[in-house]
Length: 271
Image (cartoon, rainbow, N blue to C red; front, side, top):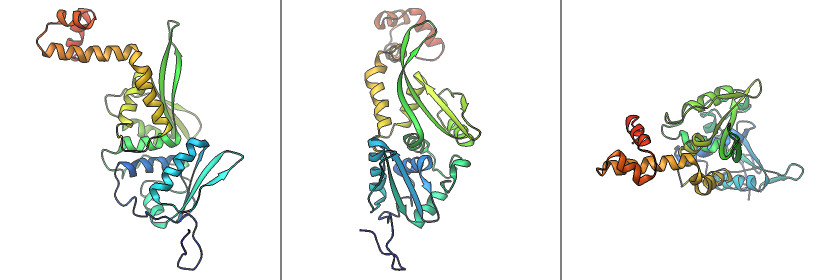
C-alpha cells in the first residue's frame, strides 16, 4: 500500500530502500547507468523509468524490486510500454550527484563521482537501457559472409566521447558517428565487440538482461567457430608449449599452424 506523507496525502511510488545509493557498488553503478540512459527526473522528488515490451517489463520489475517501490507498474497499451514511478527526495538528490537530473539528455556527461573500478558496471547498465547488442551476418571484402557481434550505444556528444575513453587500453577505440546535432553513437563489431563484452559483462552477480543473453549466445555458440577465436586459442596453446620447453617448430606441429606464425608471435610478444 502507498504510504501517507506528513501532510496526510497518499504518496505515489513510495520507496522502501531509500538508502540504496548511500554506498556505490557494482549493483548501484549498474542501476545508475540504467537510469542515466532511460530514467526521467520530473522534479526534486519524482523519477519515472519506462521500457517497452515484455523484456522491458522484466527490466522495470527488476528496478522496482531493487528500490522497493510499492506501487504497481503503469502500462500503456498503444505503445506497449511499462513504467515505474518513484517518489523519493533522497534518491533524486543522490542521482543528481551523478548528473541524473531533469532534461539530462541535453548535456549529460560521464559521472566524475563514479568510484574507480565501476566503469564497466555503469556502462553495462547504460547499454541495457540505451544501447544495442545484436548478432549480424557481415559481408567481407572478398565476398564471404561471417557472423559478427555488435555492441553500440548512443548519447550526448560529450558522454559518448568520454565513455569511449574509459574502456581498457587493450580495446581498439571505434570511431564515433554523429547522429544529430546533440547525439552521437559508437559501435563495436567483431573481435573488439567480444573483448568489450568480456569487460562489460564480467560481473556475474548483476541482473541478467536480454542484451547480456545475446552476448552469451554469441560467445558460447558462434564465436568458437570464428577464425579469430582459433588464432587466440592457438596462441594460448603455443604459449603453454613454449613454456614447457618445446621449440617453435615442434609447437607449430602440435597446434597445426605454420612455424613462421609461431616465430612471428614470439617476435611480437604475443606468446
